[in-house]
Image 1 (cartoon, rainbow, N blue to C red):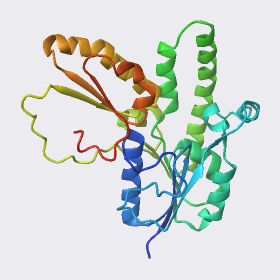
Image 2: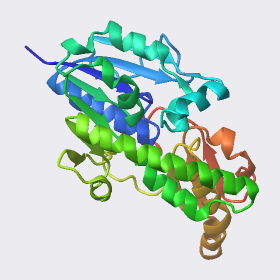
Image 3: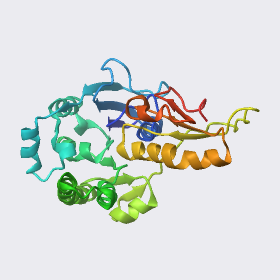
Image 4: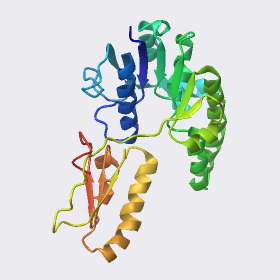
Length: 291
């Protein structure tokens, strides 16, 4: 008899058009090879009646729940429980009800797609072994933010909040290391950051695009960046590529193109569209044609 695995996702696995979605798709594919999956996605806008998984991943059950925000005052009260705003600002009521309905105590394994999910839902799973996919090590992100955050009044407020939340995240990391069967991160560097015998690296993966395409004769040299442009560091990277790197490239290769492709590019990179040599593509079903 195959084991039953409950999986929570913080982003959809189809289309796999950014790093987090590629990771989610790889995780559910691997888990489906060894067990029967119950999958729950908490998402801001994915349609509730459309399966958020690749067609080749069988499931016993799947559901999509709408991610809802708490009021600022309610979030502030929850932060008094030493919770980062990212967790405190979400209304988890519907997610907790769905997980309870699926009876995780009868599952053989629970795979939490984020540390957020583990923190809020771990009390519902009893002694069922849990794996936590902590793909974004938050204190490391905060450290990088503090190095570049503005130093005006608003920047100082952001810095103060970030320093407090870094302590909150470190506390939650310790809880996850103590109470989960395994804490999964993306790299050996993140393993070193967290330490602990049950902290393991599962690298991000990328589908094999097959043989490299030959460059079309006469076409311009193209430099491709695929990313989720709803993520602030990627917006910064796209602006740096278009405004700082591209002019240098075009001095050597006058017809060079930087192709910025991915989720939310039409929303957050519109000011780059008219720059010479910039090409934008929003969400796409597969990466192979781009590569």
